[in-house]
Length: 231
Ligand SMILES: NC(=O)c1ccc[n+]([C@@H]2O[C@H](COP(=O)([O-])OP(=O)(O)OC[C@H]3O[C@@H](n4cnc5c(N)ncnc54)[C@H](OP(=O)(O)O)[C@@H]3O)[C@@H](O)[C@H]2O)c1
Image 1 (cartoon, rainbow, N blue to C red):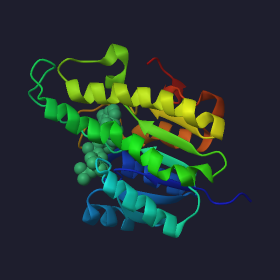
Image 2: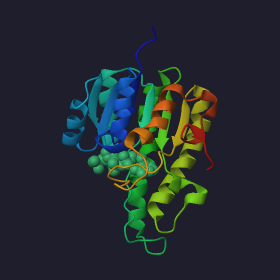
Image 3: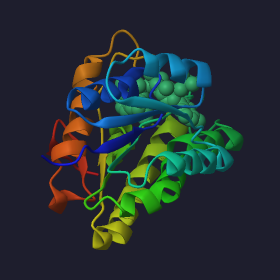
Image 4: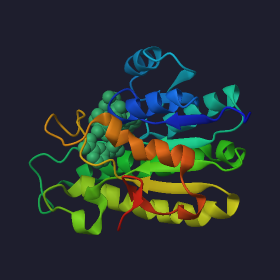
């Protein structure tokens, strides 16, 4: 029997991240559920029955990320799967002509620089895995054809996250680490709203598939519904 694998999911106290944790646990992985809100994160972790542990981590804050990585190192040696799921969608009543510079920066801190910082902080553990995978949760709004001037900071933050995925693949593929980016579709969560077309189960599916069965040679690609899609 192969050794139990460990996955870490960011922003997993609710929504797609929470569902990803449940699906990974059901497949027998050990899961580190992380969240910026300690109360919500602990509550979410305790709602599962499998091998799950909570770690506080705010992905917009390098000090918090470094603390989480240090705490992880005290519990474990290697990390097999990192899912950068945490994200915000703050573009209300703005467009590309009016959005304040500060709002662009704020969205990038979470959606773009967050996944990069978390990946770098957990890299020593990923390197020890032997076939680790990093999965970035992006959006169709980050596709070239999906850009909308009415959703400026979110679209640009995900477009740049796609670029980060390409670069991380270039840097990490030679070390045996696969890096993927995926769009969950429009999902019924707090972010997606009640009218979204997909369930959280459907939204989490491709991330979980990539985490367990993602083809190594498709590292650096953009996925939806388990298929490669255009940038
Ligand atoms: N829902 C959709 O239709 C859709 C479509 C395309 C892509 N996505 C992407 O899918 C991912 C998950 O979205 P969702 O629909 O599940 O959204 P959600 O229900 O709003 O959940 C977002 C999660 O991210 C966490 N988060 C936000 N900022 C954070 C930070 N600085 N540090 C740590 N955690 C943070 C939130 O924590 P709090 O509870 O503390 O706020 C929450 O747990 C996001 O990356 C999103 O952009 C979603």
